[in-house]
Image 1 (cartoon, rainbow, N blue to C red):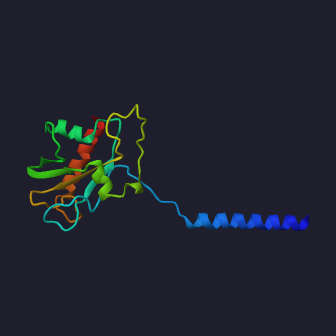
Image 2 (image 1 turned 180 degrees about the horizontal axis):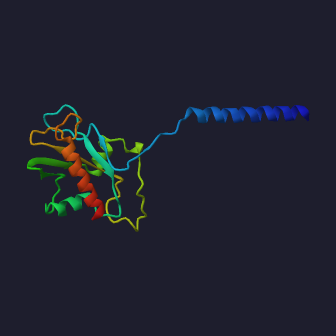
Image 3 (image 1 turned 60 degrees about the horizontal axis):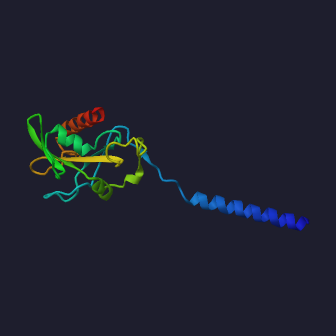
Length: 169
């Protein structure tokens, strides 16, 4: 009987050690919560640029109408399939490029970001997409959100105001 208990105890120890060893090998994936916005590189590609555009990336609010619909109404674009439109910021003309949900998934690894706004199907009014991405270029296709762009601060301020207006609509 003692021999049986020793064998059972030894097996239990090895099973415990094995589970501990295998769980230690798998580290949990770290997720980032987006409090306001983040800038992500290597987004949409445009002519004349080797790398993709930088995107202004923020969390969607599913209790609001879809962001694209908000943009269409705000800028009186009418019905459009286009995902880009022009804006004037302090006398300068810029082109804003909206990402579809498929493009967000294509260009960015959204699994590394945590969404705070979860809604039931009944409470969802707008898009079920978790995140919204927007890029901005000049008439010469210069990435306005790139780290070395002279337009960066001006455009970020504009996009932050646009995001707040969307959240408050």
